[in-house]
Length: 452
Image (cartoon, rainbow, N blue to C red):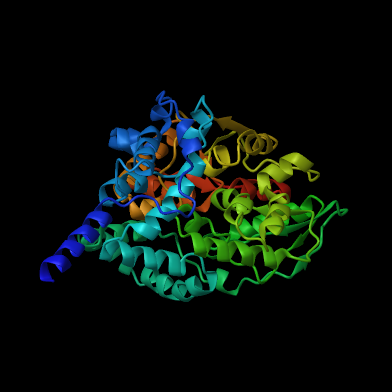
């Protein structure tokens, strides 16, 4: 009897060791087979550039997915680490000559990892902190006064100079290192449900405030509303809106992402808006993926399609409908400006020309183009907190490339990118203005200037 029990336990261990993907939406074999292993993706993959290992490239990860599907490899700690190093920047999707849908493959793999591969204790604690607070603005608000005190009392300076946090908890230190300057004004910012157009009304649009955006970048939301209303838009801001689901969706937290997506759809139900506007690149990409996120939900599948059909990035929208307001110079002389392509705009939403077209309408702007414009900055949602070493190298490269253009300001259309770039500007001792493109348009409309 005792021998039999040992035999069963050994078989259970063997089964666990050789586990594959479960039956719930594994990476599709047809999509895997579309990869011809040409290697075009390698040069554009940021994780491969930094790490230099085949398994940390899109081609390598597809090899792993194929091997796991066929039972030749196991979904375990070793294979999981290679999926975890993927930033999800989608540069490989833009580059692939065979049209491999790597975005769908990694999107299917990450929930499999979260369901089937246990994390270590430190990883579980950090991920619990991120996914229980970041996607919930009300919970995140509770921390703002504490973070404000942390900065105001000089504790942040002491902690950073001591290096103790980085020595003991490197990933927590990575989270702290991108903390922006905290102001308490966003705690008390309330928008009316409907804000009338300041000119003849052309459109009725909904605006999504975001989570990190509304608390740490509230001036961007304020500028967005002013620019829209100055260009013939009546703006609707439902108070029931929450998180767009980008953070959990990008990290395989499937059920949380579905719940948040349903809530967002419900918040705009009955608003009768022509478009739904978002000013954060990562959020916009996820909002446009709701029909995939809720594809198996019979109640919300069609609602998601209708919602997605109305979603526009604010720059995409303004370029499409045209500016009606007059733009004034924001500087006295020539204004050398570099636009930073956020991955989920460039690769995810195929939006690159529109922001440049808008910025070039501002008098005196001279747009610069950086080397490796399509390379990820290393932010990638919460990647810079979960994989800080790779993220830091990419952040360093991005800031060098941007600053080498000689631009006096960087226009960044995504809060995560802005935090990452700001951090590395400070580390490199570079005093370059970082601003959202919509804030520049707002200044140009209001006739205000910036001091460079």
